[in-house]
Amino acid sequence: MDTPNIMNTLKAILIDLGVAEELLHEKTYLQSNLQIDSVETVEIALRLKRQLGVNIKLLSRNDITLGELCNLVADAIATNT
Image (tube, rainbow, N blue to C red; front, side, top):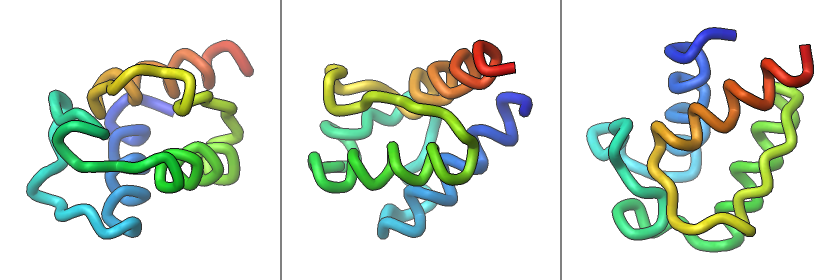
């Protein structure tokens, strides 16, 4: 899966969680900009596992951008293939 498709999947997950689409950019921080809490962080990780088959441990990470998360997912997909 290429980076634009991963980003679209991440955006769809966040929109489904109630985040406004216009706030979603590569440099948007999940916690400080979007106010994503620990419950939502777990939900994002679960949806990534279901939809893309990757395990991303978001709770153990500092505040990351959507672009950084996209790169983590891409790396995890590359490792699994």
